[in-house]
Amino acid sequence: MSTELPGTRPGGRTERNRVAVLTATLDVLAEQGYPGLTVDAVADRSGVHKTTLYRRWGSAEGLVAAALLFGIEHGWEVPDTGSLEGDLSAMNRELADYFTDPAKSAMPMASVAAAFQSPKAADALREYYRDRHRKGAAMTERAIARGEVPADTDPVEVMRQAAAPVFYRLFVSREPVDAAVADRAARVAVIAARAGAFRTG
Amino acid sequence: MSTELPGTRPGGRTERNRVAVLTATLDVLAEQGYPGLTVDAVADRSGVHKTTLYRRWGSAEGLVAAALLFGIEHGWEVPDTGSLEGDLSAMNRELADYFTDPAKSAMPMASVAAAFQSPKAADALREYYRDRHRKGAAMTERAIARGEVPADTDPVEVMRQAAAPVFYRLFVSREPVDAAVADRAARVAVIAARAGAFRTG
Image 1 (cartoon, chains in turn green, brown):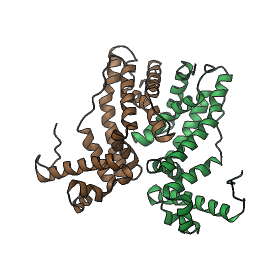
Image 2: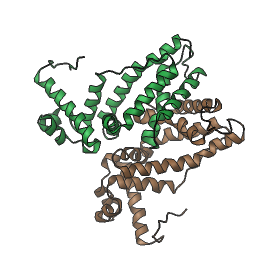
Image 3: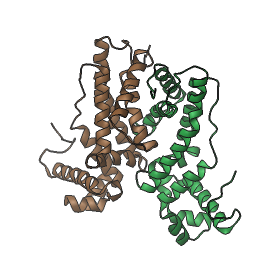
Image 4: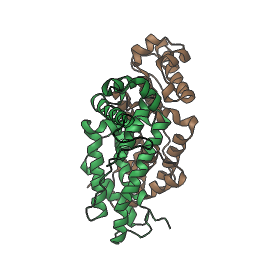
């Protein structure tokens, strides 16, 4: 998979620096969490001079934003279990797993946190979820083809609705999330979709 | 309504300082947003020495946590429109209004943001929503009494489910929120509640 940016040559110094800096950002986040992410820490870790980091990424939030978009390049395997409820449950269990495992949650947590501090990070988060919504629409499109939900069901609204209760507990009410929470939220989205709550017509 | 703390006398210096500091925290947040909230700024604004602030509240996140819990003392008027969908729509429209109006959103936004940076702020947010859930349960309890939803419907799960899609757009996908979004999320929660998705039995 290409990680090439416009105007850079793969294997060139600019591209090597970019990969080193974004990898270092992910490493620092995983080890020290978002409060420990500073431009100095990433400069030390990557071996790229901090002047370069400030010039290209501006701030710690700018680094988080770039690392998040770097993640889009690595894709997301959309669940395909044979039913809409199965697909949404799988998506939600994956979310719950990522955000509650300290080894995996640093980067996604930092992305959401940084968006409160910096419009650039908020734009990156918006772009990241736009990409996820685009990819995840396949779950509802297949359900429409199988006749599970009305033909004019909005696929993105189904995803938002299914995932939202997981995020509510993680970021708002700060309550525990487990497989039962993930599955119930998926079931609710399917009940509402069947009842026509997400029809665009 | 009493804003007395254990061990303080209303009208005493400790209590006057507390009110001055928490009011100053809210003012600084409203004017400069969460990134501008520092202990120094609150010390300047309140006239309370920053040594006192550090000793009692620890950090900017500690101030946000205390200001959030200060808000609980001021209550929340739970909607009572005569129907569950009406009540949840009113709650969601109020949420949408608070979080999208720059004059009102600084404090709630800061509360959610600070919880990513500090366990103390996360605990305060959890306590705040526990209180809201407790108060808001009345919406579903009245709906049960009216026969709108099954008698063993979990009132807190109905609230979480109704509010979650509003917060998903605000904090995760960073998409716009309006009255139509607020109303649809309320409708979905009611459809699922009627279908028995939140039964505890």
